[in-house]
Structure formats: C-alpha cells, structure tokens
Amino acid sequence: QLQLVESGGGLVQPGGSLRLSCAASGSIFSIYVMGWYRQAPGKQRELVGTITRGGRTNYEDFVKGRFTISRDNAKNTVYLQMNSLKPEDTAVYYCNDHMATLSGRFGSWGQGTQVTVSS
Image (cartoon, rainbow, N blue to C red):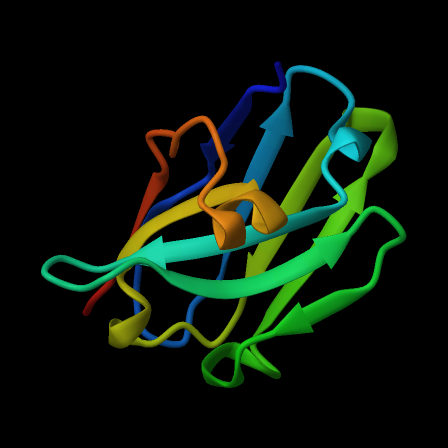
C-alpha cells in the first residue's frame, strides 16, 4: 500500500513563498491523479489542485497564477510551490489519491503540513 508524507510547511509573511513536498513510499505512478488539499480551522477540506501521472495539472480558481504543482520522478515526490501567499491560505495541507477521494474509497488522510500566513 502506498504511503504519502507531506512536509515543507511553516510560517510565512503575506506575499511570501513555500514549497510543500508529498513523498511516496512506493511508486507514485500507482496513483493516476494526485491531489493537493487544504483544511482551515472550522472549514471543510477543499481541493487545491491536481497533477496526473502524465504531468497534466489543474488548479482551483483561488490559487491560479500563484500555486504550481510539479513532480520529480527520480525522487518519487510531488510538489506544491506556493507564491504570493495570502492570510486566507492558512491551513493544513494534504496530498492524496484524488480519484479515491472523489469516490470515498481511500485509506486515510495523512498528518498534513501546517501553512501559516501572517505578519
């Protein structure tokens, strides 16, 4: 079973940048569409964007032009580059099998990584 671990979060000022990593214990290509998600306190978890194993990306409107999802096959890792961060981006960020989350069929959510945008 593929295990995913998120890392790279932290405290950053508005307008700053962070790069999050999603590292897989096995072949990340076993997941056809990898998704990045976030959940703010008191809010539902929401989709940020996706990347297919072919490298195609899609983003929700609230991050278009600011966030970029990429992959490094040699490192078996998917990244979320976050630029021009806003206070409303503050949340715990997760990665997961996007198709599995849509169907409700997935093992679990990981611990995630905290991103805090504040001055």
